[in-house]
Amino acid sequence: MTLTKLDHQIAGLHASSPEALPFAPALDIRAFLLARARGNILIYSTTSLEADVPAIEDLGGIARHYLNHRHEAAFGSDAVSAPLFVHEAERESVAQSAHVRATFTRRHVLDEDFEVIPTPGHTAGATAYLWDSGAHRFLFTGDTILLSDGEWVPAVLDSSDREAYASSLELMRELEFDVLVPWAATGGQPYLAVTSHADARRRIERILRRMRG
Image 1 (cartoon, helix red, strand yellow):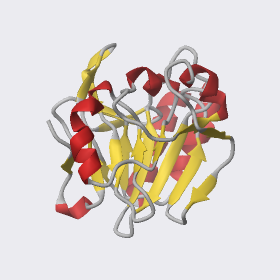
Image 2: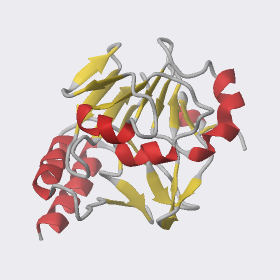
Image 3: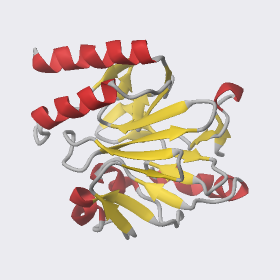
């Protein structure tokens, strides 16, 4: 298995080999490499990344690694070595599985093209990332929004803060992006969704209505 470019319309974004989620085997998880002139960024984590290390190195390696939330740390690979960044609320849990270089608590921008956006709810430190590649604006939502049979759905846990979750969805509803890239998607089906601002607003509003109903 090798790291592959998704397609010519979405140049710069590379997906790792899929890995079935043990507690939800219908879903596959992936990590994504963002090819950037100022240093490649890896989003999410999977244990199967070890098989993709040669391809990652061919693409220039990893300058920074960001997790959406602590559950991803359980799927880390020792073969991937890069400075790891997570929300401060996730530090203690993530540190049990991986070394954390630094944490953050606020929304901020790195190098003018990569925005870190805390979106608590699924977990206290869940964080979305918005990357402007120049051709597309990719929103990485972790499990806050995932793809189930092509539908945008939330992953609300018994431990989730539903009020914070709704507030985070309202925030994401207003973001400008045209590609949704979750951590998990139904196996054998598209693992990202090309969208528009109007379409994304409609889909996120539908999630909110279901949660509130």
